[in-house]
Amino acid sequence: MAAVAIVLCAAAIFESSSARASQLVSWTLTSRYVDPAKAQFNAPPPGVPARAPALRVDVLLPDGYNGIRAFPLLMLLHGHGDAFDYWVNPQKGDLLDIAPHFPGIVVMPDAAQGWYTDWWDGGARGTDGRAWERYFLDELMPMVMSRLRILPGRSNHAIAGLSMGGEGAIYLAEQLPGYFGAAASFSGVLSLQRPEWPIGFGTQGQQFQQVFGDPQAQRFYVTGHNPTALTDNLRYTRLFVRAGDGLALPVFPNELTNLAGAVSEVELAAHAIDFVTEANARGEDVTYQPTTGVHDWPYWRLALQAALQWGFFKPVTQAPPSWTYATVRKSGRAWDLSFSFARPPDTVETFVRQGDRLSATGSGVVTITGDGRPPFTAAVPFSRLLPAPLSRSTGRHRRRRAKRCVRVVGRGRHAHRRTVACHRH
Image (tube, rainbow, N blue to C red; front, side, top):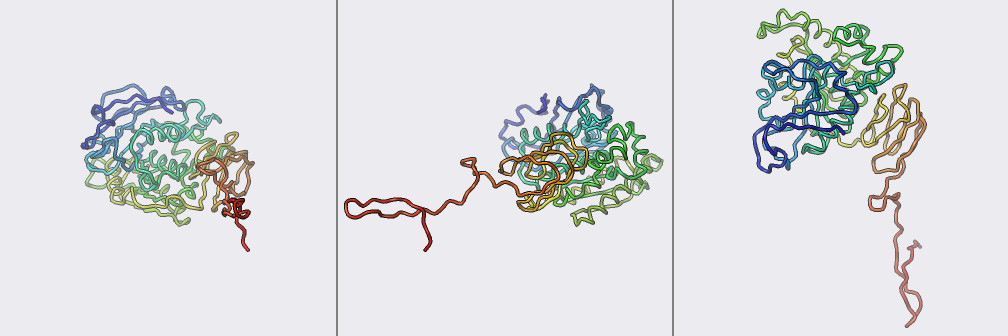
């Protein structure tokens, strides 16, 4: 788990038992998976002085947070040119004014220009200090869940983001479907395998091949990070997608000359259509709001307002008996089952659960644990019944216990009771 240095905006914030107004807390983290020296962090928002590169997180605690009462959680992700504190900056996201009494905890982590992805980097897959998805899924999320008082249940957990953060929000929701019940994308990068996108991606400061691999030679890795290709993972997740048409609204006169923002938004509107089309084809719960706008903060503030009206915390299925989960991660969690491959996959691995039967397609050797069942290791592909659950009290397989009866044996003073198995006659 990440080592954590914490800067509190109020003393003893987690220990206090008294209710209070919302408060903004800042964390500074270290990571086993991300080396800040190798990350391209963005400049601070307006009014904030320059700072050294670091993995920082803003946490907005809601009204009444006292370290005892639990609240819902919203993970709110920034875009490629932003930083963790852009969402709360009055000239950017203006979160404190847009959602002054938001009923949940809002966690806003810095992702630099990391794309919420374990970078391919010639096959390194993040082992060279650029494992952003491992940082988020294996370090940050466990730390958030353990340190903050968060309500249980998928309906109380949501994730949202803009642009690069829209890609991150949907992708991370696809990799943790058992945790996030809602996901929202504002002008998100949702369709990595559009033919023109690798070229467009190259204008952002990184090369597509460095982050996701070659579109053909590493097609499996691109597919395994493409939100549009993984929509089956979101069968039980509420989805909100909003993108503009590249036209500026007169109410924002400074945007009328934002040509780069107009071109970017037209491209990402096509990404949104690709994603929504796939989600609809699978019967998923997706709300799509095509709108007027370009790729900039005035429209993302409107998008957040629209998402607040949509509602991040509404009922969803908690533990479906059947699901599909696709991934290229070496280890992770598919609903209530954890998986760990002996080697990093070289294909998209797909698990399908139907009640007590689990099937897998792809390749490699995987160990499955969780759901209160004994672990097992199998070569992929396979289709098999899951082992019977273990008894919580004994750690042994549950068995139906035979009904016991008492029989009187003998007569008179020699009579005694004997417990025996009952038999039907």
